[in-house]
Amino acid sequence: MFSLKVKTRVYPTENEEKVKQAVKNIFDIELKREDDYLIGKSRKIESLDILKEKLKNQTIRDSARSIFLKNLTEKKLKFRLNKQAAFVGLVNFLESSKLGEIEVEIESDDITKIIDHIAPSTLQNERF
Image 1 (cartoon, rainbow, N blue to C red):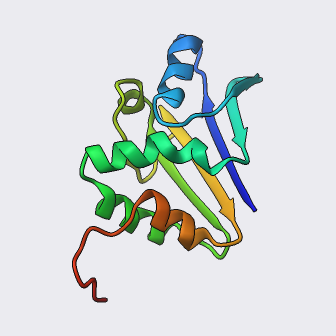
Image 2: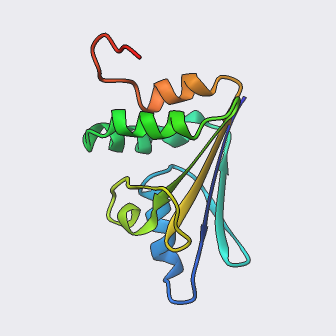
């Protein structure tokens, strides 16, 4: 079982198409408008392929992995991305913000396998 949910608010001062583009720059997902929000849902792990590639290209896989492991529950992973960075094609994680964020929730029976897939450790002989 795998599910991805992406949610972001479209503020009155924002262009909805640009907000959609920001999300689509990071996730291969269809978006629907619900009130003031754009929401995307997917059951395909391939929806994470763009994110995976960006983490690799930005050489932030270990940082991302650390954030993912910190925000992990038994079957769920939640994190937030900066919407403005996503618009220009960059992944930038947010600790907390109420402006310009993309909320991401991933559910899986084996969530650590998902983390290993999108952000494999680059450290040799990783020891903790």
